Length: 326
Ligand code: UFG
Image (cartoon, rainbow, N blue to C red; front, side):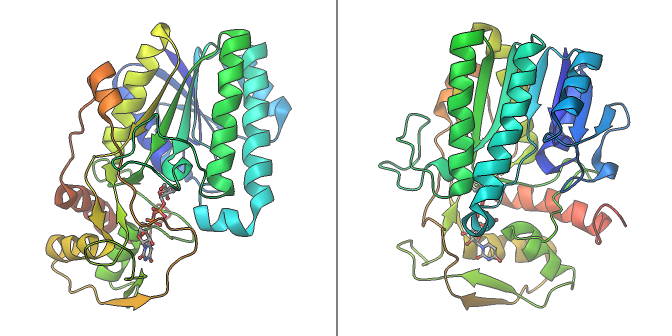
């Protein structure tokens, strides 16, 4: 299949591109490189350096390459930043998705995969969180993804655009030693902890130890990026049977302290940690139920073990201590 991947130079997008190419699909990466890395774009993919805000560039990409499917990763993705800059999220994220969707409909694209988020579940009634859980976006970021899920619902109803909305919990790990997690600035727990192990930071600050959890620190569900990528591929193939929405996690939660302790074991570094204040917007516990995708598509995580996940990230960080540009 011919697939256009927005954000294919980013962390999750680049891994999905690599997995699609392995399966024999043709891939066109559309990325403005504002957060992605040119070095992360697979050499066998066509690369278009352009912005989704540029409707003519989007039209041109779809007209020239005629993809059968779109995977949409390109987005602003930070919960905390979205609270400070709501218009970047409720504005740009939504406008860019609308540009893409309008062009997709006009060019007869019938399949669409959305990179959605666990930030839709700020106040879950049940843990682990099922796909049917009520939606309470935790931030303008989560709200922007929810709006795009609703746009997709209408595109399906009105134009027959089949979609899968995949709500990721905490994506992490690296795909072999070549594709890893690098954000600028880095805000994610695992890369920050590994930067301490590399001697690039003095310590990790734990954002609060007074949460209602066994050790007082937040619990998250860490899912390996290759497992996420596999879920995208399964969901894409399943679209011929209809649109769908899945939560994607490991189904197990680890506290911030457990993540740091595991990283100490993996790296052999003491990784000094210090307790700091809570970070606004962090819910205490987020654990996914991925039962729906397991039952419907037979998805099974290949990296369920946190130590193994962190080991893959550590291998990438050791090989690329200064990130992609190095
Ligand atoms: N944390 C620290 N210290 C740090 C960084 C993070 O204690 O220096 C803690 C956070 O408070 C949180 C946990 O580590 O409890 C994980 O934080 P991350 O920033 O790595 O990830 P988030 O859970 O905040 O966010 C991720 C994705 C979002 C997505 C969200 C869904 O980055 O895009 O999961 O829940 F929306």
